[in-house]
Image (cartoon, rainbow, N blue to C red; front, side, top):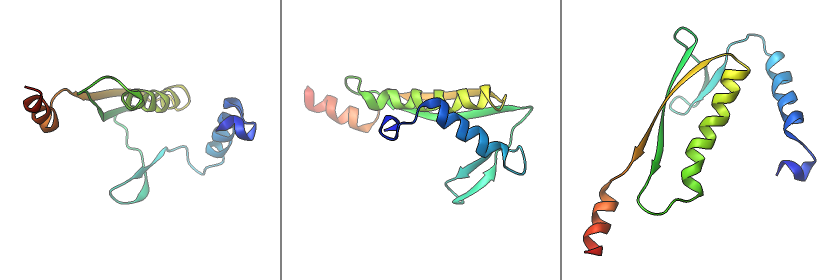
Length: 108
């Protein structure tokens, strides 16, 4: 989609840097889906501890599995390279759930 508007990653990145540098404070804000509001990101010793749900692997791999890793990697790179935040990530990979058990019983 970026090529549709003749934008490249450098142009987008310059816009991100410009919009961030014009903010009143250098604090990172994140959207809290529970409160439905932007809130300051609270760090402990400049370390972000991040738990994320990974893929549920029950059949052959598909593009949806990769999105868990790609989305995290992009955000992590921005936080570490631009904001100098150390990121520690824990991602689960679910290998079994009720759907898998039910499917295995039907296959027998």
